[in-house]
Amino acid sequence: MNRDLIIFENRAVNFVDFVELSAKITGALKRNVPDKCGCVAFLMNKSPEQICLFYTLLHEGYRCVPIDPIMPKDRVVRMIQDCSADLVISDEINYGIVSSFKETVCFSHLMRTVENVVTGMDGDEDFKISDDCSIIYYTSGSTGTPKGVIDFGKGLNNLIDALGEVVMPDGSERILCLSPTTFDMFFIESIMALCRGLSMVLATEEQARNPRSIARLIRDHDVDTIIMTPSRLTAVLLNDPEMKTLTEVKTIMLGGEILPEKLLEELQEHSHAELFNLYGPAEASVCTTYANLTKAQGVHIGKPINGSEVYLLNENGEVSNEGEVCIAGIGLGGGYLNNKTLTAEKFSYDSGVGRFVYKTGDLARREPDGNLHFIGRNDDQVKIRGFRIEIGEIERLIERIPGVTACVVKKESTSDRSELLTAFYTGDANAESIKAALKKQVPYYMIPSVFVHKERLAMTAHGKIDRLSLNCEVGANGRSSDLEEPSGIPGIVIDRFKRQMSLREIDTSQLTGEAIIADLGLSSLELIQIVVDIEERCEMEFEDEKLSFAAFTTIKDVIDYVEKTVSGQ
Image (cartoon, rainbow, N blue to C red; front, side, top):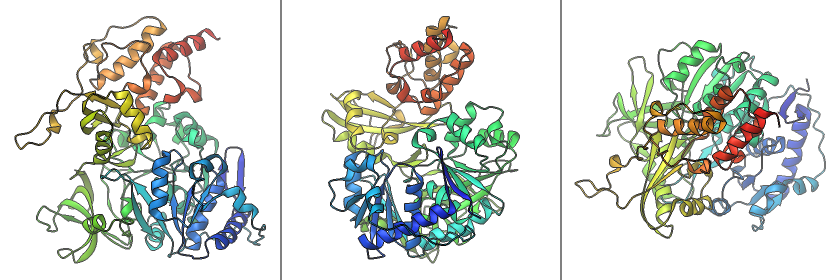
């Protein structure tokens, strides 16, 4: 049966079209990278062609390096140089970012160099990837340079089989694909889904950032399987407290960050889906453990998938029921590209375990029933919006900016279950210049939401910076319960921003309509909460394209928009 495989905007790519495009890509790859062990980097916006290229590279056994177009150009250049790509493939819109590399070719041009291929396949064949393939995922590095994590085909195939049979059983039909290509969760919602026989609804970058668009894609295309970070699903459900969006969803996978107990309870009460919590680093083929929490009495990360092993080592390096999570098994990755020192530090033979393990830095506790409970980290690595970030990398980059003498970055939990970064710094630089410099070096999710200038950073008795003493100042207006009830649309809008900021003890004493929203230290999820509340209080609805930081520069822009909408202009 020639079924639709990918639905993207107003297009539907069926099985035959996909397979024939894959065969054409294979021909082009063999011309340009005859060595099957060759390295191919690709920089493309979301599209069926991007998915097909990714699949074909893995199917044919290449080493592939997905690169997100949102990355600053300098960071992209460092990645391509580090991986020594034999070929760099870009779409037309992003070609300028990588055109300086002689290995770069535009995807459309590449396709014109080979003839169309008729495969004769009818849609009943299975998709498979090669054991010889590998993926390099670039993640944040503590030295200020991204590090390349290597995943092998054998581990990825084990993931497809071991996890796939649990979370994508026979009968699963359609998954929503939202994540950036560089986020390892993308492998599950694209390649693993294809290999398990699912079709996918592929969101554009704009749709993936918009909670209402996500909900509409789920409803309009009968999506029955979804995988998201908890914070993204929370944003979707803020507009849908009765969870009507999830009515037809059979499987919900959550991962990439800690799952809040409250969200689990809400899903258990209002949805009929099976609920899975996934855990695992890119260093161990995306996912190591899973937990079916559909009827669970609390959040945990479950047990290892088949083929993976988890050992907990205490401070003495002994196997214990509580300690650092160390992973072994077929899913173990190949370490860090061109970084033997870090690879030797994190990947090593452990005599106590008797196995070669990856030391994650995560801490967990094993309960009598065998389930693992995540406790925290033993270093300064954090996750923001599902992206793994080394706080040390941000601190080093900020300290290199002219006018900054010292910097400490901390993760803060917000009232809306999300997490943000706050930078405390000394020196003559201002927040605007620091933020402008960072935008040229790191992706948006690595830029702190709040910058706090300090005359000096307090020290501990041992002469180290006292991180625990660093907190944002409490605003003069106090907490939200102390604020007076406003009147009129300007008052309502400013009040709603003040209330959200006061929940996190951000100073609102000088807040006016001229305040720049991007500088207020709010998360995208908090912005959605503000919008939902304004809609209810002003009896209006924001257009979909207005549900992002990019839509408004200042609070006054929001006020003007609400006033025009309410008046019908």
